[in-house]
Image (cartoon, rainbow, N blue to C red; front, top):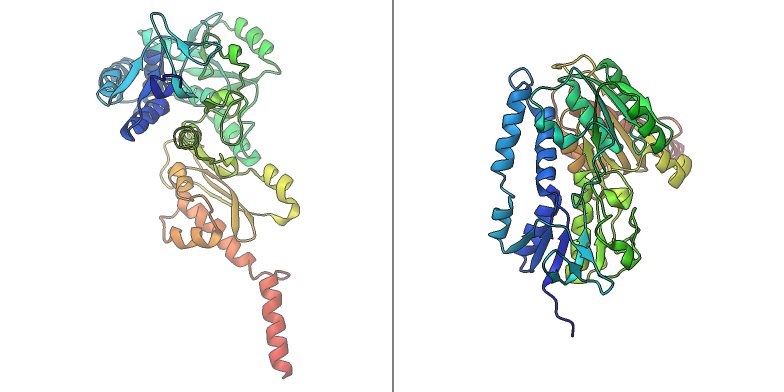
Amino acid sequence: MTHTDYDLAILGGSLGSRLAAKTVAQQGARVALIAPTWLENDVSWHLYQGLYGLDIDRYPWPNVRDWVKHQCEHSRLSPTALRSHNIDVILEPASFTQSGSLTLAHRSLKASRYLLTDGYGWSSPPQSGLYCHQLLNLETLPQRITVIGYGASALEWAYGLSRLANVTLIVLALLPAEDEDIQRLVQAQFRSLDITVVLAKTEADIAVLQSEQDELTVTVPHPFNWQTAGLEKLGIAAPILVTSQLQTSCRQIYGTGGSLGGENRPELTQQETKTALANALWGRRQEMRYEQAFYGINLLSPIARWGLTEHQARNCYGEAIQIFQAACLPSIATHPAQTNFCKLITLGNRIVGAHFMGQGASVFVAALGARPTMTILHQRMGAVAPQTLGDAINQAIDQWKGGRWREGQWRRDWAENWFNFRRSC
């Protein structure tokens, strides 16, 4: 029998990978967390949180920098804190061998199972400008910044930096994975925020557009880089292909996060990680059900999504689906472009997609659960303050309630038939 050093080795460094390591260790497993870009992940996470969440009037750029440094120095998930939970934290790169073990600078290790997730590595420095975490090295921010990146993370950084500078965003597409109504609302908000959006046709075009900029360019990289991990020796390439149980072509290795090719969202990675750990550690056969996945995007009006978009729902169910949506302006807003928006996509009583925009969106979408229905949502909502996201959700529910008794609907037809029959007796 082959000797193994660990029950699980996690190749990552993001907040989610650290929480996963801590959870597994508390369950009694022996865990190694391999995170060669720990500091870069810490700075990037806290710097974005500062740009997005802090009051810029009270916390100008020098104060943001001080706040980020303090957060990094006092992290509750520091290497020291995780080591106190018997987690072997390794802050150097590792490379797979053909036998399935990992080689480090001065030793090798073998685990029963491996988990590939976000935050493992950063690619080589950009041709010009800085990576997002390198902004912390600047004493002052320039008045104009160009943000280059992929997916929702690039939009989040563009919005965060727009609070301190004039921003141009260069991307391949503006939230292509989201519902079309959400895309239109985000476009309108970015115009209102004076964020210039430049859509490139290919990744090569992004490099050309970047070289034409005469201002600071900030690159938001992919949250993974497996070039030095030796995965090619095991026949694994990025984007990583996995089964519905999140298992790669090498049965000991599981994959989660942005390297699977989808949208890079911490909440989504957390749901994938939960499934992968159940299968890797306990031999279960749980499947990742993306039609029930949820996540949020932090912009001027926060976005949250559960399940399918309208386009995906129509492809799956055709004309059987119904759409209920409502919007209202918030009573208290820091910017005139802020809005509250709700879109519920239903199949009968079952909700197959929910798209929210406004304060508290992530809370509402997380509360939907695995199998939401309009009846359950109606029971849970109750009374809410006017001109809030909850108000918009209740308006959509009212549309659904009225639609059940609209002319031509089966409930109304059944009732009329019953009354006709009783009158004829």
